[in-house]
Image (cartoon, rainbow, N blue to C red):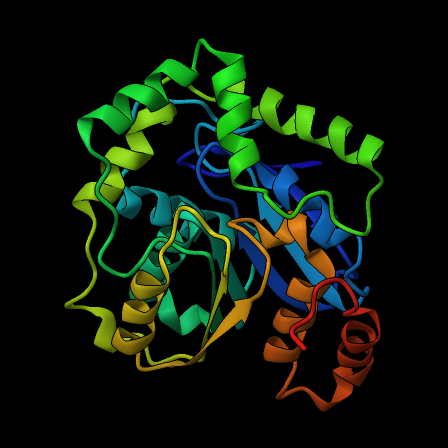
Length: 288
């Protein structure tokens, strides 16, 4: 992992691929870190330069009491992008990271080549009732409860790329990461999503946009994803991953890679190798 210092915070990032590859920035979801993208990284070709930061309050990036509003986190990413000298890059967001990606696209869309929303918070945000916030707060001190909650996001795990033992070890690291989050982050992101709504601004999202949703996702409903599809002019399709839950980067990384690589390289003739790689390896759970 590398450290990137910005004026707003210190980021820890994971990277994969060649420095001159197609740049792909990946934002994790709530109660997660960049580690969630590791199975996805493992099967990417070198022609994709993948970058995944630990977001504010998560992993080894700056832990803070505040700064978790979606707008503020989008500006965190803007500074990271500047520090990394990224331009014309593809931006993917998972879960709550999808809301941050949408917000970034609305504010800094000229920097992007495309937007990818993986089991993302819908365009109108997400409201968590008081009981849900209390449960999130309880997870801070209850590892068993936290483990159960994370496990529910991965119903199709382990992926074919991992043995049961490898996945069990990996999953415990995911729980460790979540337990070590900044205390405020346990509920602050959920609260922020309840205040965030970009339904009215969605018409400005004209850049190419790919929406992906697992059929077994217990967090994002199909109707909510469809509303985002209809609201975003640049979104031509909602890709459905059958038998997959909320976290395809872990549950089905090869299929997710195939979908994303095909999307981000379709205009780059020089990256046929990347597309061929994805198609040849898309064997775990592809739709019939």
